[in-house]
Image (tube, rainbow, N blue to C red; front, side, top):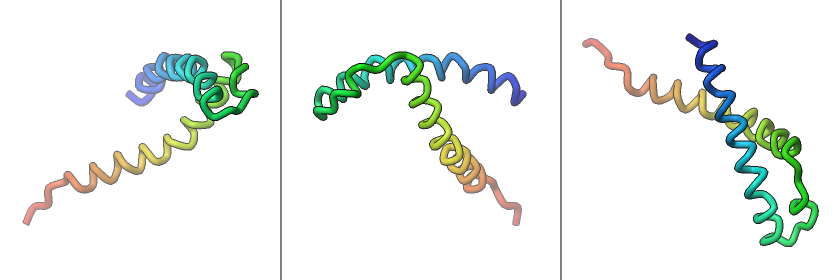
Length: 75
């Protein structure tokens, strides 16, 4: 079951990288950071990977916390 979920995450990763590729130059122009306006897709994938690595433990922690809170205790 876990392997199927991992395989299902791959299209989401590439779609997220594509959004970073499209939106980061716009953000760079608004912030006045010129090196952010020329980004390629591989750099967008690297940025997306770094964000996913940082957010994944937080998402897992939130999921386990909500699972813990939703358990019913038998009295």
